[in-house]
Length: 514
Image 1 (cartoon, rainbow, N blue to C red):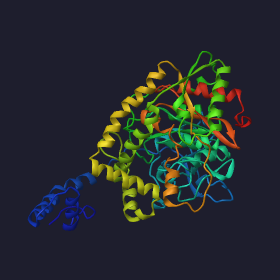
Image 2: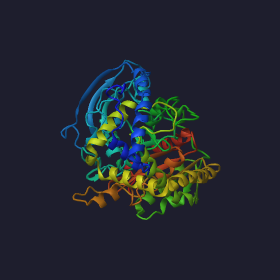
Image 3: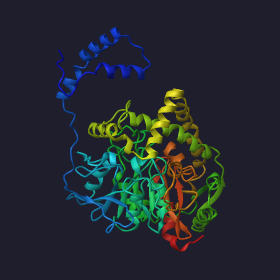
Image 4: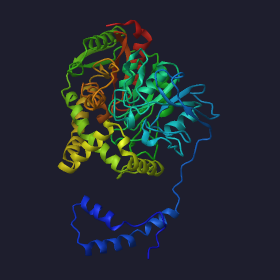
């Protein structure tokens, strides 16, 4: 007779047979019976683990109003999922700032949906470290921002709450997956927003929506408490309408988190000290391949090259460089991300084989919800799971593993140029914002969402290499913003900030039309 607690029952015969089939074991009835008894006996450890507490996290002291669902009359661009009011009495560098956080980032007691019907109603028990740092710096969290469902799309139209509209045109999209964060700062609903970036999800909407978006060096800002896609390429960073506010936010967000498995060495700096600096003698490498992708718009290329000329007029020197690996960075990303994201999904969005803190509350909520409501996920999410699992099963992880090995070559190709140049520059996205279109087929909407048109060809590689990359508005085309991406050496966010700030201080990008 079992002594296991009621919530930890051993498997039934049918369940064990299904598990055996997954491992290609052909068990006889006698073997099946033996393993049922052995498993029941072995599972006694669960009882003791349940008796022990892993509640070592603490909650930042704050007033917490979980708020209400945003309505169209308050939020015509659909940038916000939930308006909330979470603030501490701390006095710090962000006192008086209202901050929006992407709705895949945990704010204790406030609903976190990841823009999916499947997770509606889930309320985290603890704040993500980025939220803790914001509250400790005096900020008030006033919004959970809209996003593409589960952060596996980049067009800005794959949210269960509807598409995020471009702040410059209701006929165009904001970009994603952090589209709500971009639009919330541009429309003045918040002063700063936090987004995540695994393929360009922070930089793409910054480019399309006309704000500054900063993907820091991998691991510089803790990703813990944010719904992951893959530990090796998860990034989180700030968005704002000015380089100054992004630099100020980075000083708050950056730093060590011993419980985040993505971190090894963390090198912080006083990023606001890079503001108002001269860029005399600064060397810029203009990456030729970043202007040559199929689908690149001539006006975007012209706008970014004109921005480089402006930087030269401020004292920098610029030369065109060729990095052939930049083209293949897209394929390396695809091979790594598809399988890693699917395996993360199989692990109920917590993962295995890493040190650090495991979010068991989210794992339980996500695991139950995805098993009960899987059909409600967006087609982008379903494709990610189907393709990633197929690649793993059919090719035994070969393509993921080989691409992981190739990340070293990809990283070295940029590092080699960064020995000569202080920063690398290219368009953030090769084109301006997509039009909002109705009645798209499943294939059409997935292809738009997942970058088939080349939207993320420039952003994806730097999620693989981890280099810091910032998008700053540099002009418009037919009234839509153009973004210039500035890439720096690992942990050299300071130089990236100085270049972006110099351009911003000396130009008005809204008056630069191409």
